[in-house]
Amino acid sequence: MRAIRVDKDDLLKKVQKNRDAHRGIFEEAVEGYRKRSVEILEEHIQKIKAGKLEEVYVRLPRPSDHTKDYDRVIEMLEMHEDTSIEIDEDHFASYVMDDWSWKNEFLATNSTYSATAKRLMT
Image (tube, rainbow, N blue to C red):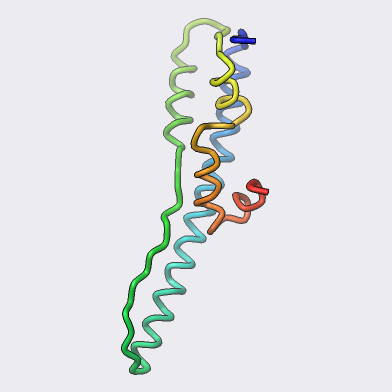
């Protein structure tokens, strides 16, 4: 099957639901990132205050966010004038199944800080 016709409002609701779930994972990851960053820096501060001379270097990957991808699709759907829209298999995978080309990278990066992302990876 190359393409199907779907109800615009149903598709819009699905993309919005997927966007909200995505944003929730990102926000959870940001909180985990902040917490872990502070922990590491405080450990270094305590060692330095105790008189230890050590190199201080902290490298943590930032949480990844693709909310703008969802927002762009939502805006396009809201501006679409027909009540239905034709989408192909690739767009169906992204918009309905929430299986974007960047999904694995998003979950891998954010699973460091987000229990939800970690659970979805397994």
